[in-house]
Picture (cartoon, rainbow, N blue to C red):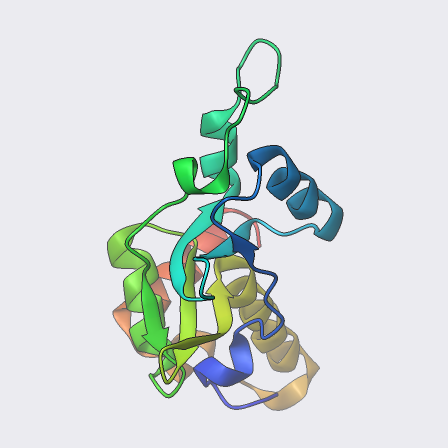
Length: 162
């Protein structure tokens, strides 16, 4: 298994959208690619927000599952952006997720997006660690990651049956 580093755990391939894209088009992109977060860029390509599936669902008419006429990404994206530098520790990124109660944090390198760390990425890491433990490596999960933040994530995943 790869070392427990942010750069080894994050998703590197980012799909981004411009702030003025229609919300409906953004939602279609998310569904087609099975993703829940889209970093949002301004006209110059600078990172200005993130659009999550929760933001999109909040924007939908609950009765008709449609969007308001003319709704754009910039109207419903979340900001300011929660981010962490790529050379930060995995524990630092996890602390942001837990403290801010969000499911994703953007990863940047020299202030440009280089990836995203999501709760799904962390669950994949946990799955791999558990598999490694079952295959004879004798990894004691709670001992190998002693941070209270990681232990809390493990307890939550375990209570969810993961």
